[in-house]
Length: 149
Image (tube, rainbow, N blue to C red):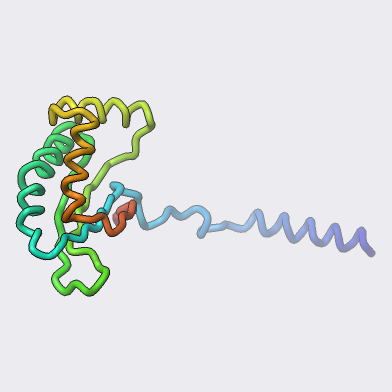
């Protein structure tokens, strides 16, 4: 009896494997695209113009340099038009074609410091000055999905 059940199970498995499995052969309709880094920024009241000037001068110059190097494929600034308590005022969005390993990240960091002509200590000091009026409310790393066809 057990032998007959085993033979029946093997026969059923053989038939199921012989049948076409279209669902397994299909590709996903989505294709992985750029990584999207979103920094959520909260700016103290009365400091919006000050931060916008930083974005227009320093941040934009650095983003354009990174884009020219091929490190990023684009960047955007979004505003929260109907912000509620605790929500970010701005979202800084950067599109990156691929993540890099530690060695490449360190190489890019050195090139970045050469480009801005600042040491790590100077960069940290300027970040600390901005922290007096702008605050990172959160960040996300997502990945854009595009249609395959």
